[in-house]
Amino acid sequence: MRTLLFLTTCAAAALLAQATKQWTLQELFQRNIGTKQQQDTAFPPHKIIGNMHYVGSQSFGTFLVTTPAGHILINTDYERTVPVIKDSVEKLGFKFSDIKIVLGSHAHADHMEGDAMVKELTGAQVMAMEQDVPALKAMKPGGKEHPIDRVLHDGDTVTLGGTTLTAHLTPGHTKGCTTWTAKIAEDGKTYDVVIIGSVGVNPGFQLVNNRQNPGIADEYLQAFKVLRGLHADVPLGSHPAMYRLDEKYPLIGKGPNPFIDPAGYKAELDIVEEVFMRTLNEQRTTAQK
Ligand SMILES: [Zn+2]
Image (cartoon, rainbow, N blue to C red; front, side, top):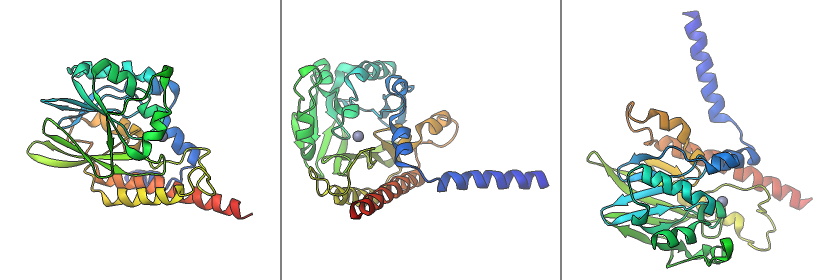
């Protein structure tokens, strides 16, 4: 009995430690981007819920929405990651050439550098948030122009074969950082899926006295407000660590769908917002000296 009590106390302490762990900016950044090997190695492709599938690597979140009218790919990652994604799409039994629409989380190379290559391979329409267009136009792997077939605005929807995704502007991390939401059906129920664009602060990001983007801190605050206002049954993100994929994947088929995790969505926002606020306050203090 005493042993049981001891073990229970240990487990509770471990959980509490996990919940109250204070992440440094560097740790959180590293958690998301992983090692180069993790970036370049496929995570086993799998169905997340309904027609939403995972086809990304161990540290880059890439999602395939399959429909009778073709597929939507969210995040092409680096050009070097495109063959990894293609292989994962095919392992799930889908055709890469059936991708009709390419969307992205935000204008950083680890999420959208591969757009031109995927368009070449599939003929898909590439769509991007207006505020990210200048950064995307400057992204030219191998000299290739970044394709943009449709410019999106906050609240715009993208529909294909009965599935609709909504683009929410969640700026700060980039000017046009986009969080995608969709209602996805499974077993007669409909679930709110949210793919977090990113509210991470990268090492070197200047939140105070930023001449290129004086409003960057306010943009982040706007993004947190938008994200807090979204209901997420199934939280996903531009990096799979944002929704603890490695912990959820082994639970597939062993009970309720492990990706249904509204509490996990809030917990992730708490972690990232705490790091953001702490970094902002530190930078403000330094700027006043
Ligand atoms: Zn980024």
